[in-house]
Image 1 (tube, rainbow, N blue to C red):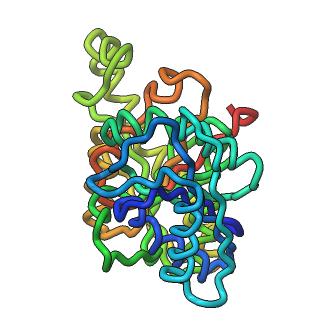
Image 2 (image 1 turned 180 degrees about the vertical axis):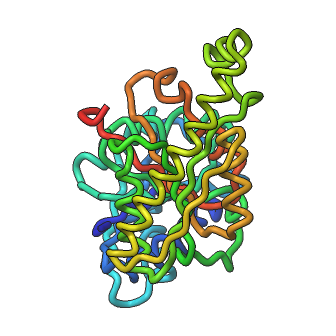
Amino acid sequence: MFKHLLVPLDGSRMAEASLPAAVYLARTLGAMVTLFHVIERGAKQEIHGERHLTDAKEAKGYLDEVAVRAFPAGIPVERHVHSSEVNDVARSIVDHVGKAGPDLIVMCTHGRGGLRDFMFSSIAQQVVGLDRTPVLLIPPAAIGAQSTTFSCNRILVTLDGNADHEEGLRIASSLAKRCRGELCLLMVVHTFKTLAGEQAATAKILPNATQALLDLAEQDAKEYLQRHITMLKADVVTATADVRRGDPAIVIINTAEQKRADLIVLATHGKTAMDAFWSGSATPNVASRSVITLLLVPVRRDKL
């Protein structure tokens, strides 16, 4: 389970939306926390309408203040300022992950170029590309809300039937046990109308065969999830399972909202190329639309 959390901060209240989750997880899991700030070369004096920390001494003072203000006594909190100016903040965070060895990065989804352009094109893609470190993303709905709380009472875990992609389920199961929460397992099977690319082209040529395959996939999904439910119950983890039809991203978001999930767990493929990272994945669509916190769990390359 997570024992070391890295929390990148830039001095803004927007970035501080990640703090309640960091506090909750550190306290619940007995983890240590490292607050991290990068001095960006040529940075603007303001970010998100607030003063931007561009001085190493000022940044250290800020992290010290956050450690005292946000974290209860008993939670070990380290502070680190990358004082050498850098052009690529995302790359600096990635480099620090390799040096400090955190097993979870906790951060909010915001950025200069917009949610998708900066957050996912730069930071998340590179971090997930490390092939080892999960990233907890706090959505825009939580940004700036000082009363924001975080919990893991109900965790939605998306699965695709591939055993090599079940790391997210393992982590979610451990979280549920430590947080005394419950799991909601979800598999999404396309409908005839939501198929895309080559599958859509094939469906037009062979509609009956395609429909039969989709129906078979639904049945296989139900049996696959039931096997996991049996194992989870044997491990004393409360869990339910759903197989739903439709566009994966839309179904994931709607299901999470209907079940009032606190967290959505998604497996992601960390690869070097941006096109490879996003190709065929529901993750960016879920991330750009969801108001629920996401846990992105990389699928190791040696598992692909």
